[in-house]
Length: 132
Image 1 (cartoon, rainbow, N blue to C red):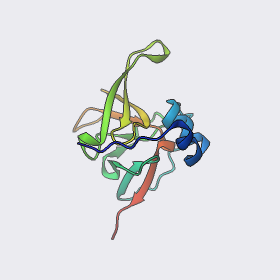
Image 2 (tube, helix red, strand yellow):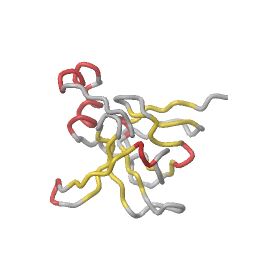
Image 3 (cartoon, rainbow, N blue to C red):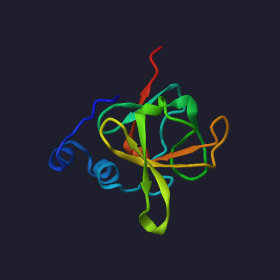
């Protein structure tokens, strides 16, 4: 089981960039096509709040939606799914299992091998290149 990181709202606000705070702690969303500037190289995408490994660059694909998309998390235990009924729709929210940061949503319209599209906010992720 993942050890939880618990901080007050004031602590998160003091530590995070305003955009990262709004998205990860207030369940915000960045505009499409504004934050998918990650290198197309081997590496890991980590939580912008706590540094937990979330997605492998090998599982990233261009969904055409304007948000970074992945077929699966690096480890199923790295993320948690939550029911999201905001905006008069029903979706599955994805949060970091370690710190509860809002990352985005998962949809059943992705490519093989999983058929899933983990549609993440780029501001919620930090890219770490693979060590050579």
